[in-house]
Length: 379
Image 1 (cartoon, one colour):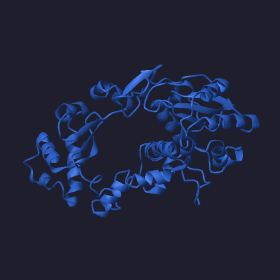
Image 2: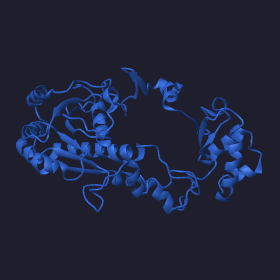
Image 3: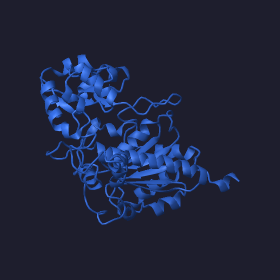
Image 4: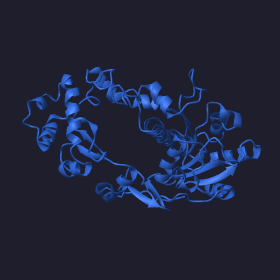
């Protein structure tokens, strides 16, 4: 338990799993919540064992239980009675078969928030089908624009679906429901599906589509077609990015590149000119190294940034000044985000406690006054 951070005092049970649910638990722990993971006695052979390198375990405490045993299920229900939320990422119906479904848990603690993390959702024709990030965002439409014209669609692995459309939406849903429970004394189920969240993330692009700025053909829309909004290979086979969307930024970019007096580049907002101008930009940026382009463009309003690998990103002056990455126990990891002026989160640790803390955790939670108080008890 951290004892500090904006979520200090919030108690969360996380049923061990992979991907977005553990990431959500890490995010809550980063912000000060007391997150207890109900871990498997026998590790899941179908998952990669990250051991001490499992950054998603930082700040959490662990209990090892065999949920096929009635005594273990009862122990979880004892924790449920004193918690604010539970997170699970099983296929629909698994928690019910274990005896830990929403009805049972909410009966034990009516103010509980039951967070469910799935790819397809709790219902629908695909609800029981296996899948991963790439499948969910493919179906939701979020993968469509992730790729160059004529190339295969490819999004950053795990980020758009598992993290963006999954873990972050689950976290927002949990916190919203906890606030509601504080007012009403009534908990509820939060059904966070990656297809839902990643589709919701499309609303900005759908607005652009409605105004004609986005079309269904890759490479012909305002954020995936222009030469001034793309990435380029440099002379040293490293890369840079441009995002000179507004005319004033594009004008400055052309001035910095020494092409402001060339008439062809004055037509930078004509989609018919984009393929030719992109080709000319490709030739232009191949003339210098990435560091040389950084010297010319970084820090200007040309909307420029080098494309960095994670190790380079950790040492970049801006990232270093904000201490965005740190090495903890020899592992490079990103620090908690966002930042809070009055309730800064604790410094992350890989693990705050070892396994088999069953009795200690339950005693601590029993002696801590629950924050879920119904209006009837207040009246």
